[in-house]
Image 1 (cartoon, rainbow, N blue to C red):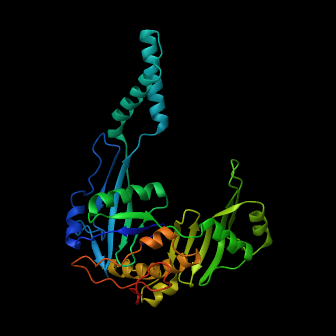
Image 2 (cartoon, rainbow, N blue to C red):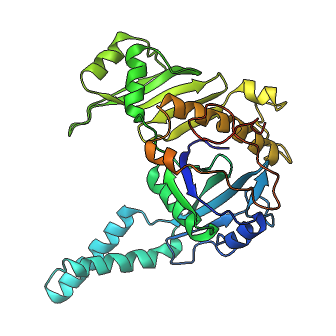
Image 3 (cartoon, helix red, strand yellow):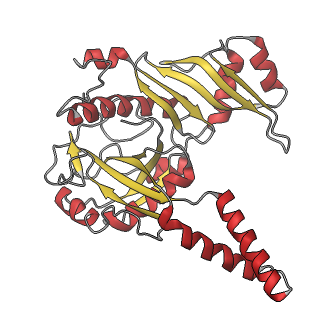
Length: 341
């Protein structure tokens, strides 16, 4: 379901009904780029069926998908064209354009070449957990995720307010402690990938790949001032991921034991015909239990977010009632029950 994800806390949301959410998204559907349009984005059916709903609910978990199409002209082509235009103008007038005029020429060249550029598409999955009060955005960078979040706030209504998940311990601080003590937090194991970076102008970097991290050398790098920016981990032998200093989860992978336990062919991962619901249920069921454990390992929610936590919103009408999250109570102060499997 996700390979990368940034997680946002729902600080407030008077959630509309599921049909209302779908109607709101229908005002911003994906449309292909026009001939001279460099980028276009909009919502597409999460199931991949052309005429399916734009907002799907599986076990109370809401899933959306945003498609983005971009058209880019190679920089080398633009540069060659501009140089030719500048040479032509200089030959005709005796003066070579500079500054604003060059910028205008560049815009004109790009505009003229865009109709011949090949479009490139990418999709971003969004998962809204109304009970867990989180929004997961399938992006690897804050910049990309923030663009998605802005669209959600504009369209979903209900005075939606989101903020990036913040914990008491900075991920870099916690990862440094785990590596120095050679002891992973409860329920987790440290895998064989890590990046350490010096937080100064030189940004000296050490990377370990497919290498045991239970060695004194790693601790020595940390003692010299380098901080972990990425660390590969596994939770309960069920979900592997790479934790970053920005609290982004990358390379998320549901391990075979999860898929086989759910009766899904591990090689297929639930993507057979009609497998959308199974895929969503399995992934959200695991990640909803992973997140509270990770938050607890990072010292719990930051004071501000813990103070803003409020009773869960009712699930949107038309969807299956959401199961309540399991795991440590540091993520949500309300009652817990079994998560969706």
